[in-house]
Image (cartoon, rainbow, N blue to C red; front, side, top):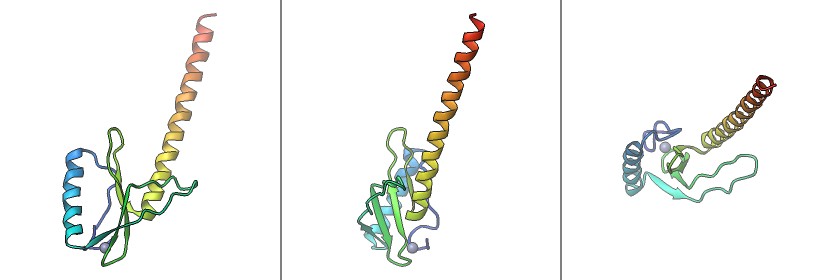
Length: 117
Ligand SMILES: [Zn+2]
C-alpha cells in the first residue's frame, strides 16, 4: 500500500455506486500505469482465494486482488494476503451460520415434539 496505488483496501463495496467510484479511480491508475494487471495466482484448496483480477503497484509492488460485487456478493479489493484472510473469515462465518441455523432447527423440532405430546 502506498499513495501510488491505494492507501487502504475495501473488504466490501456496500453499493454499486461505491464500486463505480472505485472503478473510475482504478481505471485512472491503470491508464497512468501506476498499476499493472497481473496473472491471478491459482487458488489452493486451503485458501479459498478466488479473485477475478489482480493488479501490481508500479511503486511499492503490492499485488491487489479484486473480486467485483455481483448480486448478493459485495466483492473486495485487498492486498493478496489480506484477501486470502478475508475469504477464510467469510468461509468460517458461513460455516458458523450453518451450525447456528441447524442448532435452531433442532431446538424448534425438540420444542414442537414436547408441545405436541
Ligand atoms: Zn503502491
